[in-house]
Image 1 (tube, rainbow, N blue to C red):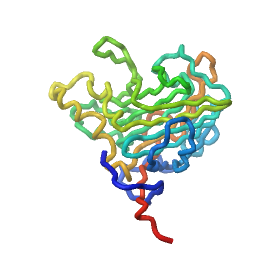
Image 2: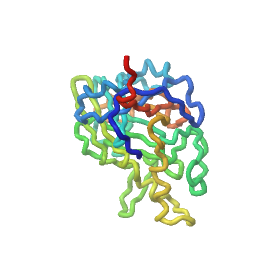
Image 3: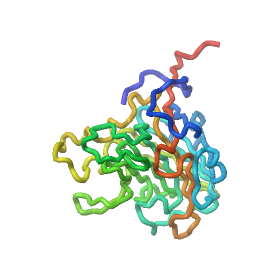
Image 4: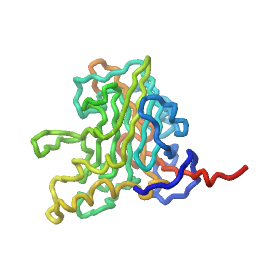
Length: 308
C-alpha cells in the first residue's frame, strides 16, 4: 500500500477510472471516502463524512436488489478508508434481535447481522486474472475467486465468539470458503475462517443494533484458502504460493479504483436462530455481475482547496 504524505480532508475529486465493464448499470453506485480513522466504539458521530445508504425489503426493487421472505429490519450502512484500513459501519432497526449460539458456527445466515460483499478485482466477468494455469476453469457467473470476500459481522456484543467476524473468501477452486468442509493440518474441519485481526464492536439498544469495524489491509493478506489450494499444483512450490495470495488482488493505487460491491442484512426473527429472512441492497446472491460498483474516492489536500 502506498504511503500518503500530507493532511487530507474529506472531499473527493471527480475521477475517470478504467474498469472491467458495466456492472448492473442501473444500480446506484457507492463512494468510499478517505478518513483519518474513526474510533471503533459504536458511536457514529465521527462518520459524518461517509456516504450512508438505507435499504429494506421495500426499497431493494428500486436499487436492483432482492429480499428473501420479507424481512422487517431496516439497514443503514457505510464504508470509509485510509492507507491503514477499511472501515465499515451499520445501524440496523430490528424489533427482534436473534443471535443464537446453538446455530452452526460458520452459518452467518442463521443469525442477525450484516455482510459487506466485495470483489476487490472488480472482475464481474469472472476471468482468471493471475496465474490462470493454476486455477480451475471458473469463468462463469456465481463463482468465487481470490480477491472476492464477505465481511460478516454478527449482531452480538460479544465479538470474541467464533460466530462473528466471519471472513468468507473466494478460493482457487471457484468456491466460497464457507461452502464446503476443509481439513486443516491438525485435523480440524472448518468452513470459512474468523479474522481476529479485525477490530469490531456491536452495541445493542432498544429496537436496533450498531456495528463498527476496522479491517486493517494487512489482515487481508493471508487466508488458509489461498495459501494451500487443493489439489496443490505440481508445477509450483510453496515458496511461490504467496504470489497467488491476496496482495496482488487489491487495487493499486487504491484511491481512484473501483471494486464490485453490495450489502446484505440478515433478519432472523427466530429465537433458536436459523435461516429466516434477508435483504440484499443490490443483486440477488453470489453472482458479482449483478452487484454494483464502489469507488475509493481521491482525497484532496487542504493545500489544493480553491480560495473563495
